[in-house]
Length: 167
Image (cartoon, rainbow, N blue to C red; front, top):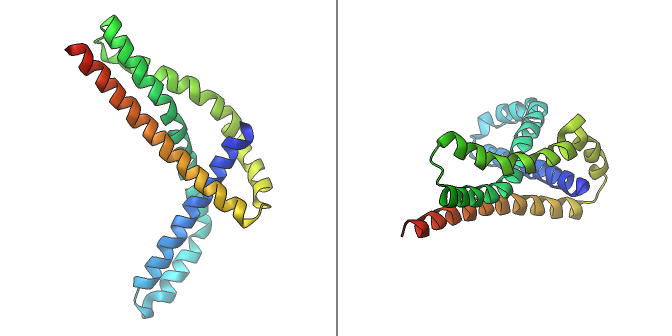
C-alpha cells in the first residue's frame, strides 16, 4: 500500500510534467519565429519554479482523487442517514459527509506526505526505465478518473436513494 500510493503520486507528477511539456511545445509552435527564442528563454527560466509548482499541484490533485473514493461512501452514508433518521440540519449533513473522507484520508496522508516521504520514493523511482514510468503515468491517470467516477456514482446513488424514498 505504501509503495502503491507513492507510485501513483510519482506517476501523477510525471504526467503533469508531460502535459506541461506538450503545452510548451504547442506554445512554441504558435509563436512567431522572431519571438521563439524569447519564449524558449522564459520557459527555461521558469523550469525550476514550474517543477515545484507541479509538485504542489500534484499533492493537491492526489489528495482530491484519493478522497473522491471515500466520497462514494460519504454520499451513501448521507443518503441512509437522511432516509432513516430524517436529518435536515446542514451542519450535521456536512459532518456526516466528511467522516468517511477524513477517516480514509488520514492513513494516506501518513503514508505519503508525513516528513515528505514521497521524496524518498522519488529517488528510487527515478532509476526505473521508461516503460515503468509510462505504466505508472497511465495507472495514475486511471486512479484519478476512477476517483472521479466513484464520486459521481456516489452522488447519483444518493439522488436515487432520496428519489425512491420520496415516492
